[in-house]
Image (cartoon, rainbow, N blue to C red; front, side, top):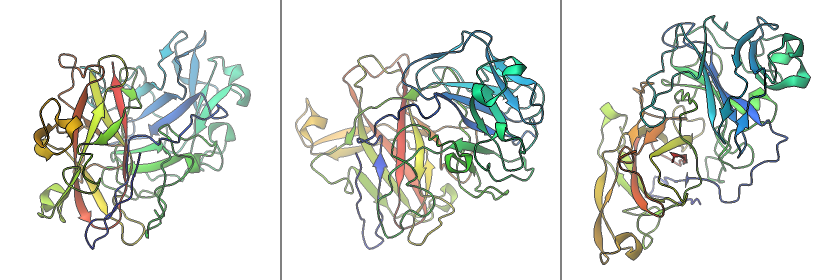
Length: 412
């Protein structure tokens, strides 16, 4: 469900994907439960930290009696937090563990009327650059490799029980809005920019990657693309908890099947410069038609950015895109299926998408930014079989070939 197209002599290329049609869920040589995102500190200081646990299966996972322990390399025999026995983590769901003293992203949107508060909390700081490990027991005698569910740490962590492979690059102490997150593999078309180092790793699919090598599986990003030792990438922390929406494979079609994916109204290029909104070289508007094939009403519809060419661009002829809030707009479609029951051509409304904050993203959205379709709510769900036209707005800070990939997340 992707295409490579060109626009004018600037040769702008679009890769817009909801899911990869050829993707098959991996056999669980990959971990069934993973540490999917974490950070050691944030704008609120060294206690502004969180650890996100991900159920990497298509079935609910129940925590075994006695609980699962999150342990850090600085105190290898003491549980930082124990996920209580009997806790159910939904299929493709997440459990969020936060520092009760300093965690600052508690207002980040989650489910219907909920925010990304911790499902569990702890009180003592996780020191910078130590390793983290999740064990399927809370008994310190069981904190062994045989009982380890997952681990991630930097190369500064001497105990290999608390990292996989050589470990991530250590980061300098910096109270910025950063995170380490698992890479979601995306295909990388052989364009003149060859994707550089930012895409194409692993088999395409909508789920976090787990090769048992932290350097391959995780990457660093922050809201200003800062360099604090682990590489630069514009992106945002996106902590998710038990109430957060989860991945769903929903069809995403053109809003006008009679026009090409690169042509209006499916994609619109506006050259109006707007530097104040991270759109020095204008904007791209991308419209898609999302259909609810779940068999149940959808009450929460969110889009999770898993690949985007943005700052810093590591190869020539690569666009620098910034995700923006769209207010929505009317457009003309010649597609009879989109217009029905009215005849074609018709004027149709595309609903806007809102860049979710906090975390505040003054440079625009990038990797792991999320966008809400705010008109889908408990009071106004998307009915089974119904469709909605969605509009994405991207600012351009540089032109060239580009990729833009989102996963769709929903709640019933």
